[in-house]
Image (cartoon, rainbow, N blue to C red):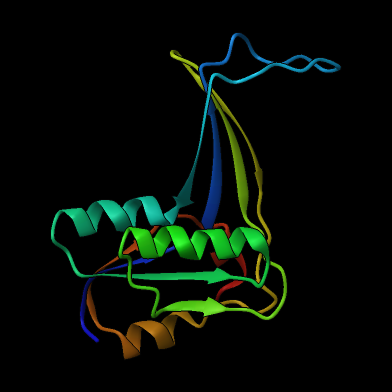
Length: 144
């Protein structure tokens, strides 16, 4: 398949807490006024490019865990092509908890590299594109 843009990088299940009274302190609990779940990471760029009319391929990894399952559902809702996403038979939960305030935000993220790096050269050879967008160097650290 020929793509306009290939987007390479991790996908995260974003848990976004908003309308918070203050930043939580150790030993305390606060309550959010609102909460949403969204697919994050490189999917944000892929979705934006797709809305602009580009044919986008998303190079990423998902596992067999509940967070990966939710990410699949969210990608499907956005109608993002999952053809180039590698599916793994082990848990690979990538999660970000975002605490969003009017003037700033804070994140706690869990990232895990897959057992084997993606063969990016092979993917590019088999899936020509006009542009490669590297959304993060996290998964590429061990990629030749």
